[in-house]
Image (cartoon, rainbow over all chains, first blue to last red; front, top):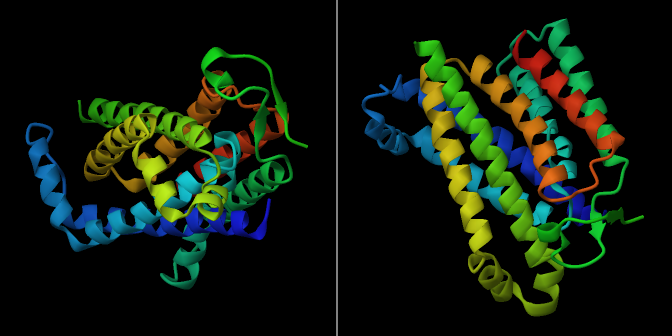
Length: 142
Length: 127
C-alpha cells in the first residue's frame, strides 16, 4: 500500500461520514414520508442539506471505486469504518456532546478492527483473470 | 405495523447495499487499478472504461435502491436505530458476498476485523 492508496481510504472516510451527517440533518427537516406517498421522497432532493450530502456521497463513490480497483471489498469496508470514529470526534469537538464510556469502548472496537485488517494484504490475487465468474482457488499477494 | 415497515426498510437497504458493493467491486476488479490506468493511458481512458462497464451500473442501481430505502427509513425512525442495524448487517453480508461471489480470501484476520467493527458500531450507536 502506497501513501496515495492510504489517502484514498482516508477520503472515503471523510466524504462518507460528512455525507451521512448532511443527509441525516436534511431528512430531519423534510420530516416523515408516508408509505402511500413515496413520490414525496423526490421532494427531499430539493433540501439544501440533502443536496450537499449527495455531493459528498458522489465524492465518496469516486474514492470508493478507486479503492476497490486496488483492494478487496472485504479489506476496504472494515478499513473505512473509521468514519464512525470521525463522527464521534465531530460530536465531541464540534457539537460538544457528552460521549459515554460505552461509546468509547465502541470506538476502541472499531479502531482494533481497522488495525487488524490494515495489517494484512489488501488484495486477493486470482490466478487467472475472470476466475471470479467460474470459482476456483485464490492466493494472496504477499 | 410501523416497526414492520422499518425492518423491511432495513432489510431492503442491507440486501441492496450488499448487492451494489459486490457488483461495484467486481466491476472495479475487471477495470483494473484506476491510478495505474490513468498514468499509462490518461484520465479520459479511465472515464471511458468506468462509464462503459455494465456491471458497474447495475451495482450503482442497487446502491441507489439502498440509498432511497435508507432515506425512507431515516424519515420513519431515528438514525440511532437505522444506522447501527443497517451498518452492522451490511458489514456481515458484504463479507459473505466477498467470500462467495467475489472469491476473495476472507481469512480469519478479516472476519475478526468485520466482527470487531460490527460490535463497535453497535456499541457506538445503541448507547
